Image (cartoon, rainbow, N blue to C red; front, side):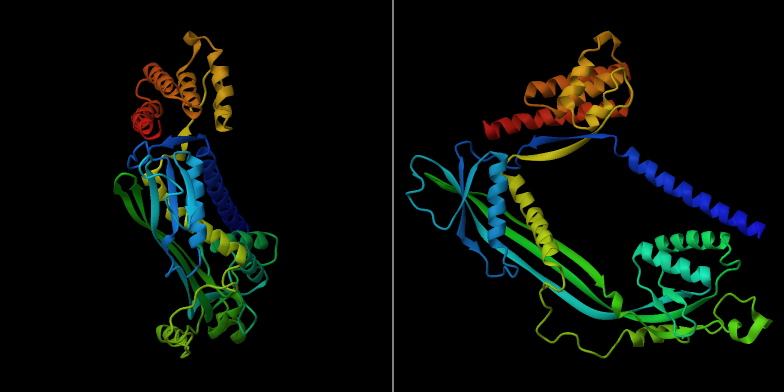
Length: 431
C-alpha cells in the first residue's frame, strides 16, 4: 500500500508539473502589445479612381447553392468603404447618369460567386476498453465526461467502455489514483475490450469568389483578376448511436482465485480485423445516386451556420481586398521587460500614449535600454504619420546601441524599416 501511495504521488507530481509548464508557456506568450497598422495594396490603382461600383447584375450566381451572393457583395462594399481608399456602392445597373466617363474614371467589380456544401453520413467501428471495479467505473466515466467522449456499458458486468485519448487517459489515471488513495479500490481495476459501431456525418461548406477589377473612363483596363476560396469541415459523431457488437471478457471473475492475478483479457476478440471490416460494412445505402445533400438546419444549428458562412465570406474576400486597396492589419510586438519606467503593462493594455508620457518624463541619460525600446514601441503603436515611424526607429536604434546584440531590439529596427518602405508606397496610393 505504501508503494502504491508513492507511485500515485509521483503521478500527481508529474501531472502538476505538466500543467504548470503549459500555463507558464501560455502566460509568457501574452507579453505583447497589439496595435493596428495600415498596409499598402498589392497593386497600385491610379489616384484618379475614387469611386467603385460593384455590378450585382454582372456577378453570376448560378452555382451559388448557399445563396450568399448578396452577403458577399455587401461585405465587400463595407470592407472597402471602411478602409477609406474608395467610395464603393453595390448597383444593379450603371449608366451615364451615375458618372461622366469623359470627366472621371471609375472602377467596376464583376465576376462570379460559387458556394455549396455536403453532408456525408456513414457508419464506422472502434475498439474500446471497458473498466470495472468501483474506482475503475468512476474514473473512466469521469474521464469521458472531461474529454467529451462517448461511453457504453458492456453486456456482461456493466463495465464502462470508452475508446480513450491521451487527455482522457491522463484524466482517468489521475481520477483512478485519487479514488485508490481514498480507499475505493486497492488493486488495478479489471478491463475488457469491445468492438463498437457508431454513426457519423462529415459536414463541409465552401465559398469561392471570382472577381475582376476593371477601370472605366476615357479608356478601359482590367487591373486585377482573382479567384479565392475558403472552406469549412467538421466530422460529427452521433453519440447516441454507439452500440457494442463484439466483446471479450476476463474469465478470472468466474473461475475464482485460481487465475485471479490475471489483469488482461483471457479471451481476446477473435479475428479482430475481420470483425472490424464486417461491422464497418452495414450493407445499407445511406444516399442514392443524386449525390450528397447540402447541410440543413438539423446538421448545423442556424446560428452556427450563419457564423460559419460569415467567416467563409470574410476569408474569401480578404485576398481580393488586399490586392486593390490599402488595408489595416493587427500586429503583435513583444514588450521589453524591466526598465526604469516600468511601462510594459501599459503597452500590454494598449495604452501607448500613457506609456510614452511616463517614459519621456525620465531624463534621457537615465533611461535604460528597455525604456528606449518601449518608447519606440509606443510611437510605433500610436503612429499617425511618417515622422512617428522615424522617431520609433531612432529609439529602437538607441536601445540597440545601449545593449548590442539584443534580438528584440534588432527586430524592432527591422520592422520599422519595412513600415517606412511601405509608407512611401502607401502615400502614392492614397494621396
